[in-house]
Image (tube, rainbow, N blue to C red; front, side, top):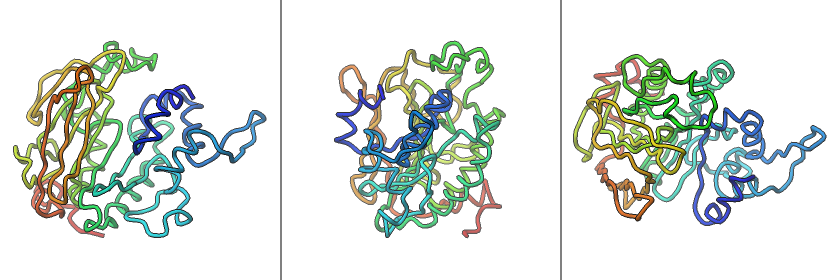
Length: 314
């Protein structure tokens, strides 16, 4: 309630497409409350469920999740696939098709692993069904990055989880065998290449990173003109107790900024997508990337070279 009250004025004026992160999971009951309320279910004080009009329920009904969950009652013609859950879902805004996914099956597998297969099945169905003549740009979003160079996810990563000692062994998105990162890449990248996903945007790490077009840990281009793989951004510096530290930039980093900032995404037309990172302090531009694609199609050559087993389109 405190979060929704604080952001109420903003959320009534701009589109809102939330994704589940570690804080939602840590909160336990509040995690379930989000899932319930985004489907219009409000737990009663006596343990019963009451369908009613809450602030969150109204916002989601008006903008994003609830319309998808309600399936064809609200969206008889969908550009993509219905998910029937607010853990993962898709929504169109202008020329962009956004697909939001939940990384809990990878990072909290003890309780959330059961959602991995349904999510991947839905994601492939959604990406395969997108009409690129309506939404030429496809952006995948998730809380955790697939590529980054942060090295602190312990005591110096002020995420408020209260369990920094348990998280302190994490080595960052190094691509050197960190299990959760490698597993999520192996599952998601073939689909991203197979269906021509243009961009992946993540948060979690309290900094900003722009990543060259990359796949399977390999930089495949240092140009954003008809890139042969998706473009990645880490935009987790909107505001947190502390910024995270960077380690070795690795081969895929194009630019890193350790300062409070947020991202803007503008689809100028069917061929030009502009990502801009803006400093919180003075509203000036920290970084800007212009992605140009003359054709929105699968990254066939990259797919064949790095994930040959995933080439057949279903």
